[in-house]
Length: 131
Image 1 (tube, rainbow, N blue to C red):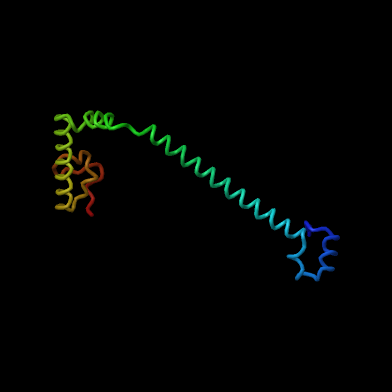
Image 2: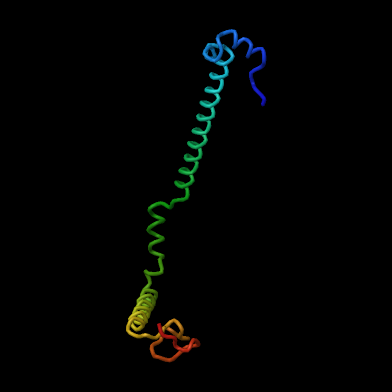
């Protein structure tokens, strides 16, 4: 086992009263102070790096976020603003709800239909399995 304390230091330690005199040894005190300072320096460095990263992230978020005028322009350009698109969306929702209501009312598995959006009991490729 390798030790950072040399044999001469151990001899001096035994002359001072063994392990009880360990904290009085100047070599040990300097190692403890050095270790504490190194740990404190590392903690401060990590804190500074985390703070810098958070600052950079906040700055980038502020640069990328659109302003109020741009938000209003984007809302005006939304597809739901056009009447034809709204009608298409409403028709699709109606068809979907009608299909779900039909599926709830029947024992047929409507997912096996070739054209499941249309009504009717015609069997699809699956042969009309029952649930």
